[in-house]
Image (tube, rainbow, N blue to C red):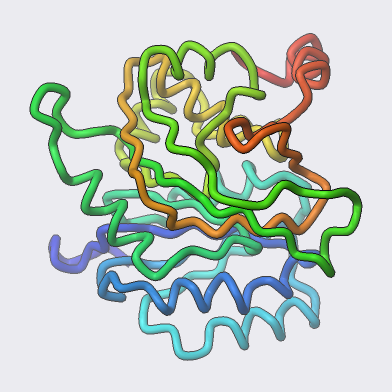
Length: 269
């Protein structure tokens, strides 16, 4: 539906990617969206399902959406890609907001999350102007029933500012990723500009690579980030797809795997 005027356009489009395997977490993630202090008229939710929702997943989905005061669109696809990046790309044409916030089904955010990030991204810096994206800190929580493979170091992530030194480290390796997808609010126009320059919105070949690759590509194209010293993203570790070597470094993928994918042409540097 085409908005009639700017008052009909939400500030934020939340793009939530889900699949049948993690549908049970939707009750928690959508409850955190319903609890946002930001007025529900100021954001929308697009749920991009990777494949078709089975009966069990659909029941979780229906229950989770009950009582939401913000608009919700649900996008299903014929095939399950196994990647979070592909459903995000597919959802982009449905977004109407000025800013994009991405979350996964197993994410949970603090009540002030969207309001804090929206305030920061609309606040110009005296010298640098408006940031292209902003990101907050996160609290790492292990879901004991869902994650039993190994010990996870729980706690609060440190403040990692968007300094030249941190950017230089970020560009070297996925090990130096300090911005998780669930931490970040990015301008919608920024993603389209980035796609125009590089031919990509997210890297569609890797399941957990999108956050590091996206932020790295923004830095290489002169786009500016701003760190928000607030813990607003509750990062639930629910599976074996991430590991932490320290609280300062989120390991998106092992370096040797990165080199392998790059050699196979699956990563566009």
